[in-house]
Length: 339
Image (cartoon, rainbow, N blue to C red; front, side, top):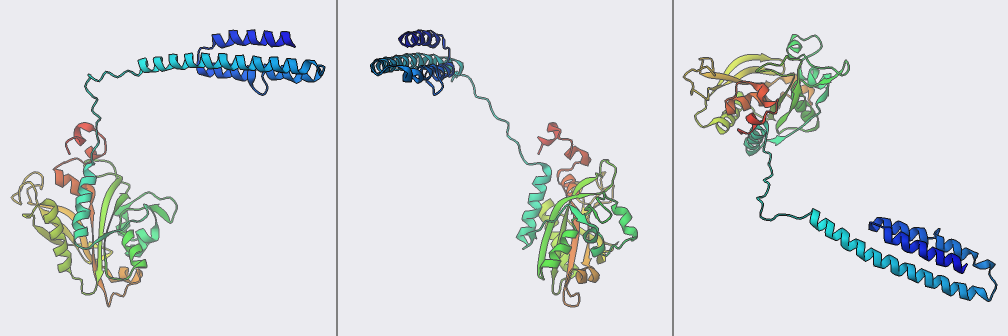
């Protein structure tokens, strides 16, 4: 057994000296001094020794363990010093070199205009409401006075998930959901993504953004609608902006109107942007149809309201005088860095 301990010590010295990293040294320690190591295997044979030999071999085994611990500790200090030196050399920083400037992103034009719009309406006492983009046919059409077979549905062809579930074509379903759970007074805007089966061109996309507005209270009139939209337009495009309402038809409002704003580029004199008319069509609006109020659980004999819907893309194009909506979606940094 003495010879075995001497042989183990010699073997360990050679192995420890060859270790090139602290990880390799740790594996060497486990191999010789671990619970299943070589020294433990030798000590398990102590039971076969005579009572006189056991103390002698025990003392020799302890001395061997002490020598191995000392060798491991010494080699460990050397390896740690070498590894620290290598790491310092590899991670040396030349403090005289100029720093690398990180490129910071900024808000997308849609976000810029949407935040301005939300600030304007929040200042008028509105709150922001949201709803699901995957919507029931009932909320998207039927509750808004667009029953099955209504011809106005053709202008809002969309993507269906099932026969009764679809990608919403407008954010108007949010007004119905709000009316179902809240009695007047109601003052909300509902921005969000909407979908229609349109071909992509300079002014159309199958995915775009809309902002729905809804006010319901006692005594609400078309005058309130016009005043609200005039304030919104002047805040967004300047105090010189004028507003014009033209009669129109929407199934969910009665009476309905198209809302034009005086051209931001020419001030109403006529230019290519407004096609020489001096006015630009911006949004649709009107007084909430009594049937829609009744469907939402609100008494149309007691309350009235107005609603409007405007495309964020259109507002952004006018705000920054961009004539092709596709530019906002292609992520061309040469374009986006301008904002």
